[in-house]
Length: 336
Image (cartoon, rainbow, N blue to C red):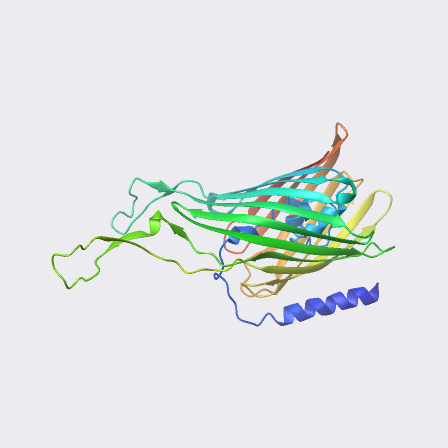
C-alpha cells in the first residue's frame, strides 16, 4: 500500500512540476465539454477518475461502465454563469458478459441575447442564442475482476446564431482495483479529436474586389474563413481509497492529477462521508496549483433510497469561483 501511494505521489509531483510551461488558455473550442455533469463528483472537487461505482463516474472515466451491474439513468441540471443552462442525460445498459453500453446527451444554452452593434448599442430588436450539444456512445467492460476499460465516441456541435462548428471526439479510460485494501487507480484521456472551424451564413460578407476601379460591382458576395482550433484534450490520473469507519458509515478519499492541452497542470481532491448508505456529505478543492485558477472549494450533499425495487440518488453540489458567481448542480440517478 505504501509503495503504491508513493508511486502515485511521485506521478502527481511530476505532473504539477511541469506546470510552469506555456499557458494556452483560450486556444481551444468546445469548452463546454469540460463542464462536469455529476453533482456528486463536483462536490468532491471533481476528483472522480478512480471512483468506479456509478453511472456518474462514466464522464470522468469510461472504464466505470465495467462496474455497473444494473441499468442506470442519470439526469443533471446546472445553473451556470450568466443564466446559462447546462443539462445532461445518460443511460447505461449492462448486457451480461458482453459488457455495458452507454449513451449520453449534453446541452448548453445561453437563452436569448440582444443583438447590439456600434451604431445601435441598446439593441437592434433582434435576438440570438448560443447553444452547444454533444451526443455520446460508449462501451465498457470489466476484463478481469480487478481491471476494467472503456471508450466513448462523441459528436459535438457548437452554434452561435447561424454559425456552427462540428467535430468528433473520443474518450478512453482504464481502472485497476487492488485486493484487500480496495484502493483504485484510474486514468483517462478525454476529447481526443481533430481541429474544427466555424462556418455559416453569419460569416457571409460583401466586398469590393478593386476599390480603385469605378463602375465595377462593389458588392461581390464573399465568405470569411475562421481558423481551425483544437478541442480541449485532457489527461487524468488519480486514486480513490474507500474506508469503513464502522458498521454505519464509510469514508471515500479521492485525488486526481490533470494535464490539459490548453492550460497548466493541476490537482483536485475530495472526500465523501456516507451514513447507512442513506445520507452523503461531501467536500473538496479543485484546480490546486493551476496558474491563475478561478476555482476553489466545493461542497455537497446527497440522499439515497429504494423506490419500487430501484435504487435512487439525489445529489447537490456547490462550487465557489473567485470572480464569477458560484455554480449549483443537481443530479438524479436511478438504478433499475
